Length: 198
Ligand SMILES: [Zn+2]
Image (cartoon, rainbow, N blue to C red; front, top):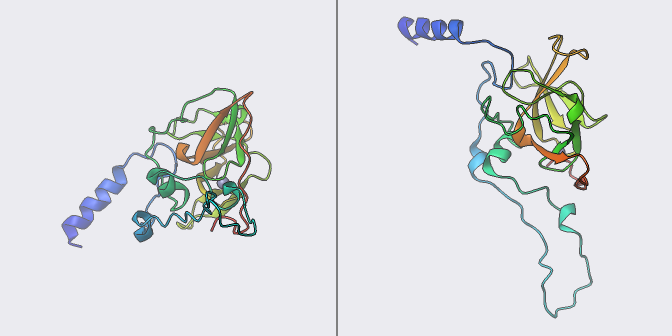
């Protein structure tokens, strides 16, 4: 890197807006996403329409063999740990009563009464459904990543000590990792696979 380039980069870094910490990786080496486009989509649903051939029935419900089918952006975030752009998610500022479930496996993750406006550009919660969210050290070695306990789908990051709410915790979650179920509507059945997220 030339000295000029280097100082330009430093300048840009120094003056980059640092509103609040979020899901955008600070300087994480961009993870290789060569698999991102070659969506493997294991559609191994046994065809139930075999007309006559009477095989000994081994009919499992489709929900037991695959997670919910994801759009490319959902797959990029949930499976490849990507991040949706700040202030673009459909749930960033919603406050309707209900439950947020995992878009990949339907597990209930957050209740609307834990949701708050963080101003950071992503949906924020200060508590999770007990046991539904797992915390792991992010690949950047600094932040704490949160994933769905059931399917290991990437949700976002969790930050503590910001004093935004009494609980002093902020789950910063990508909207595309979630699906909102309004209060009063039945929650979808969680999809539990023996492989647990693989
Ligand atoms: Zn899940």
